[in-house]
Length: 352
Image (cartoon, rainbow, N blue to C red):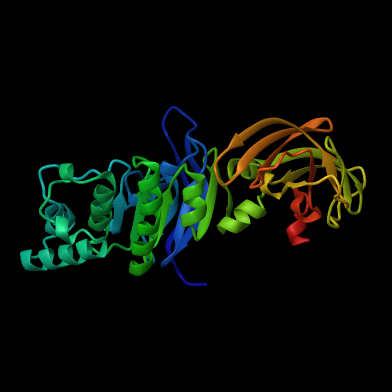
């Protein structure tokens, strides 16, 4: 494994007078890696970023950047490029001067400042707007200026604090690709904080899920989505059907939907377990369908989203969420065996 550019070891910080903050966080970010941190409001995401940046000092644990212990170092000496939610551009400075500003405060000579700022503006496709003031730019263009400014002094780490939340939906999607392109081209270790699950899943090399100041799971986007470590992760990342069940045999469980066939799971008969079924894995079928896990449903809610429909159906003694591209009426569904995952300490079926 490549050596970590950012290494957090036992990092702890609690705000005075409250239990909020982070506790005992171990985390590493490698060169060129985009690590995205997600979690509910107040879980400690932004606190974690501020500890890496040097805006807060930990009460325990350490922060290392590029192999150097910076736990007691000030923010400026840590070589972190930061993009804030508000962009924080200087309104009286041109785009060019905003981008060059970090070089100016570091004493870089004028000619070199101009050349490096021009190079960064080329990288984010804003060279033609170099003389404009921030007020004359769109939200997406301002975001690109902030990104260029964060990278112009060649930092060791890029920190992004919900950088897309102020943009409209279409611009936000476009800027995801732009951030990823620039980050990969610079091969820079990056920590991105967001509350947007789609943003996390589409951008991340790895995702860290936080809850109550602690990291509860770290993994690739696919691992987090397909193999959540707990019911909390399953329901926080994407839509999920989480059902309490009792093991009926080596490849089956009794659930409020009825008895379901599963892949071999290794749990003891009679054991209480929790299972996860993603809505998109619930398959509408016709009257002539045969096989395991066929369930008659009664649709109670049907929301149309263009490419997909989000349904809520009554089934057996419970309800189940369904996501489908089918336009047909839904009266029966099938749940494939491999769509059923065990949670809360039970062995995950995809790893069995």
